[in-house]
Amino acid sequence: MIPYGRQTIEKDDIQAVVNVLKSDWLTTGPKVEEFEKAFAEYVGAKYAISFSNGTAALHGAVSSIKKSHNRDEIITTPMTFAATANSILYSDLVPVFVDVEEDTLLIDPQKVESAITEKTIAIIAVDYAGQPCNYDALREIAYKHTLILIADACHSLGAAYKDKKVGTLADMTIFSFHPVKVMTTGEGGMITTDIKSIAEFLKAFRNHGRQSSDMNFLGFNYRLTDIQCALGLSQLRKVDTFVKIRKDIAKDYHDWFRFGNRIIPLFIKEDSAYHLYVVKVENRDVVIKAFTEAGIATVIHYPLVYKHKYYQDRFDANCPIAEKVSKQILSLPIYPTLRYENQLKVISNLF
Ligand SMILES: *Cc1c(COP(=O)(O)O)cnc(C)c1O
Image (cartoon, rainbow, N blue to C red; front, side, top):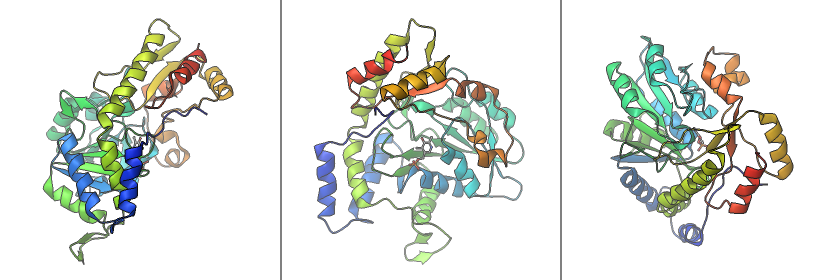
């Protein structure tokens, strides 16, 4: 089976993990801080706080928002993995789904602004497929209405927006190191921020709510191990290379689809991290059948969050563009070790 994404693990990655296994610290040791420091430096943020996965990091980010009685709404996009919106529910807050722009499938800043009410407390933007959202517009809106801006950058590690790396564009930026993402630690996550009080809260939040030996609030055990952080350090050095290879694969796809009109690739900005390669196809059921027979995984990013049963039973939403496009899209395989012959197999099964 050709998957849509997979990890790239090399000898030095394996050696880094083995070294930790032979050391004194498997968790809460020196590799954690080393990884966090290197990660903060890489994106250009003041603080990086590691988490056991991206979902736990999202939980931490939403939990760091100071609650007030009448403000309980968070604006987000339906074109994302359920975890983005689930993190809002963990804190008993209300997700308000706003529609996307048709060419990029990124949250539409104008619609964000129209959805703001006196109850709105934050925005969670998602860098869908690896492309940074329109952060100039989102930051201006957040500032004007005193909202916290969270970037779910689980797709966009290594991407940039107007020469600023993803990780510095919002109040908090969330990353995931699941094997399909740009780099991996098996499971893993990170939050970057420039706000000291938030960084301190998050460090305690992922460690039972403990600051030094006292427990001040109810937190969780969301720590990332030294084993994973050693892998993270090793992978982090390769992020730019991984993104470059992904970009080359995307360019190859683009060249094939440029002259057709049945297969329409998603618009991709130059500084994307190329996490997903998404095409709109007319006859998706036919393509899915051909892919399945040819041993190519067919994955749709995403069935809209509010269309999941759990959400349908609880929340109303109306995002016509996202609804229309989510019936047409398909993610094609893209990852650094994808062989050219397999890419050709994917392309030939599309035509
Ligand atoms: C992968 C992903 C997450 C969750 O990350 P995990 O590390 O799997 O918990 C959240 N949001 C988006 C957009 C993702 O792609």
